[in-house]
Image 1: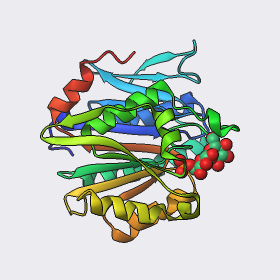
Image 2: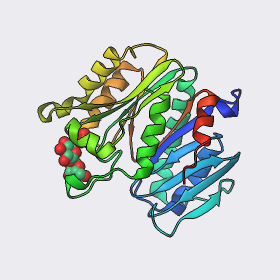
Image 3: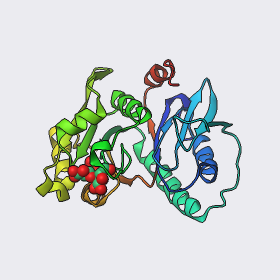
Length: 261
Ligand SMILES: O=P(O)(O)OC[C@H]1O[C@H](O[C@H]2O[C@H](CO)[C@@H](O)[C@H](O)[C@H]2O)[C@H](O)[C@@H](O)[C@@H]1O
């Protein structure tokens, strides 16, 4: 990573560790040192949102992204993390973060996302599992850059209602669509087969492709296992996730050109 131009770095991250923003801050700050653009980091419990604006790292953290208690912290501090849970989670994440970054060099990322508990919070009423606007925007942005699929145990119709992303995106000469793949209830234990199917049919079975699957529950473990066994990708539990990916700087600038607030 050290010899790559900083403007070729792009970061995607989720965090929903059940810890507060302050204890998470040092870990995020540390991660931000490694990238120029930290594109998003939004989750449902420990909500952190970070991005780089005009060359300056800004971390915005909040217990409620729509609420009043937003803070903006310049991302150069190195406050100690006092929370053991946070330390453990973040330490292990940052190890894999480095590994993923290293293995992503020169490869095309393919992104697979679970819905409930990953893109949306887990709530008591399944009809109310809405995505936040920030997460929607994040998925939209990710899909501009990577082949992006949502793999879910819900019906496609329901997930489309929640996700509300109908646009098609173009990046370079590749058309990238957000796909939603419905896994029937009787097959839900086999998101592993779904991943194999998608990788095969999308022509992603290539050593130049790095599939990354992000999920939160045991059904997602089947997909994690496939990637682990095939040794050609990463399954990431959303306890705490940071992924740094290389993309052409012109795509990054598309994102920076938009007002995200
Ligand atoms: O594969 P997923 O996208 O993770 O969908 C799996 C199931 O998600 C839903 O149930 C889960 O989320 C609900 C809303 O937060 C929660 O109330 C429930 O306890 C969770 O199991 C959905 O209702 C199921 O149909 C999906 O199979």
